[in-house]
Image (cartoon, rainbow, N blue to C red; front, side):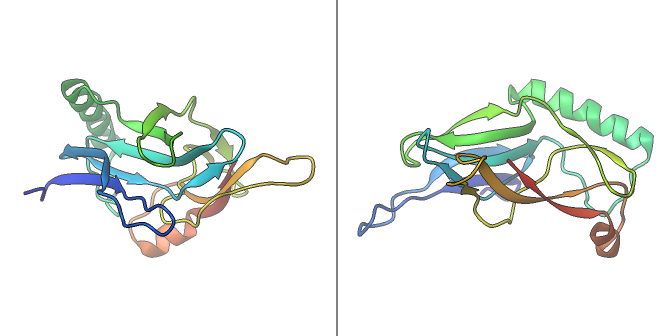
Length: 171
């Protein structure tokens, strides 16, 4: 029974072959996670996708007080340490056509200044987005480009999320 467990899995299929057994990328009871759409780097022969996980499940449309947010951060650190699993943003990658996967943490959390004047300390999310591409021509040939979105500010419903969401790209 995995009712309280988040699973991220992949399956692969060789051209003309059968689907292989799923490979579990992450499973941890009580945690929440998501993975973004994949992008393939022809230069390094690497499949990559943005990956995020947290030992604290937050309610998306709940307005948390500063005290609640401080407690959530304390719980994140405590539960991460107890599980021996780091929370946060990562790049999940495979160098063998998706047979095995590894992760590396994102180097830093970027700061973005949006057109509405808000400064956001976050990275765009590619979960649910289309697959990324690799530019083939021009000054930026070889650059990986993934569609994503970011939500900033506080919101308590879908209308607020729409008002505070921005389309962007990860590259």
